[in-house]
Length: 452
Image (cartoon, one colour):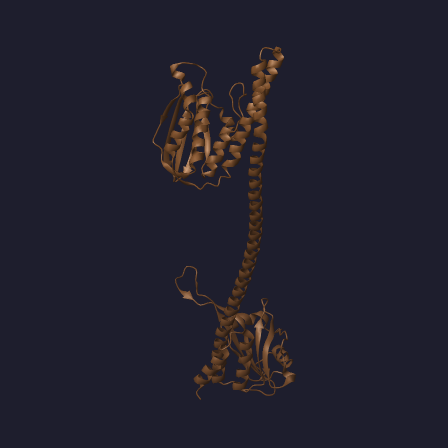
């Protein structure tokens, strides 16, 4: 079998593995068998250029050097650069007079009669020399492939030296592949670990979200039950209170009619307070019941004409509009998806509010005027109700939509403080927003949106 064919087969066996320890073990075994030498081992350099025998193949156990740290006391670092440049060292007989006494003593310590040393050089990426366009390969001195004769001297043949040199090149390629494979495995392990950590975090986050979702479902069920109980409570309270209130109101009114002027002035005043209190209590109960039923309405939303809803609201307020000589200017309004009854209530409350807070001066320029319009933008309708009344301080813009919040006394302006709160709740049920823009003495504009 030709030399090149033998070399190829040995190189193939060396490079069949991607495990560094297998590559090195195969190398020393194949080399010792082909050279028929006493000892073959691989010496690997550390960062400080000391080294250790990492793998060996020996004929006799007493010649073993495995795991021994070997430091050459004669040449030390001056041999590193020649080896890095590919120098091959060989000694046929340590006692032939060409070897220094120091080196003879060093080799005798390890029973060496003849040796052959070939560097294992790992090629790195090409790099560019400074001020040069030439790309040259750089090499890293990884270790040494060494053959020893411990029982005899030996004349190393050129074909043997060439064989060991070429095989060292193949070993270097296999080592490089093994290193890259190990780095790839480390990257894969790190990726797998990161993936596992991510999956764990996702599971933990999912469990947290599921827990939060369960709590939200439980809270929603509690809220639904609470709303149902509140609605039932409002119905019961309104029913149980209305009858006695009607009775109190009726009897106090009869008392006022029958005995007015017959009792002293204090008694007439007390009877008046009682009638007024009972009447206001009934109004408050009615408004509170209306407020509580806005959000709990079971009526489905459907296509509704806001023009018709506005017509009905104006009809409901016909008398108060006539009494106050209110001028209403309106634009055509669109159809929307909503609750017709609640939209009538919304328009009625806003118009009634605009009429209620008109200016006291009686002049043509101060006559009550209400403008109603709409514009469509950003997938929603923007409605407005504008008046020329007394206006509202902007700092109270949020407060006026809270239930029972009043900016004036009942003596100045009547009402229970629920009208705008009901408007707010109706607009919310229609997935919109409501707000106010105003200045004191300059009227107010109430805006609300309804999505398409």
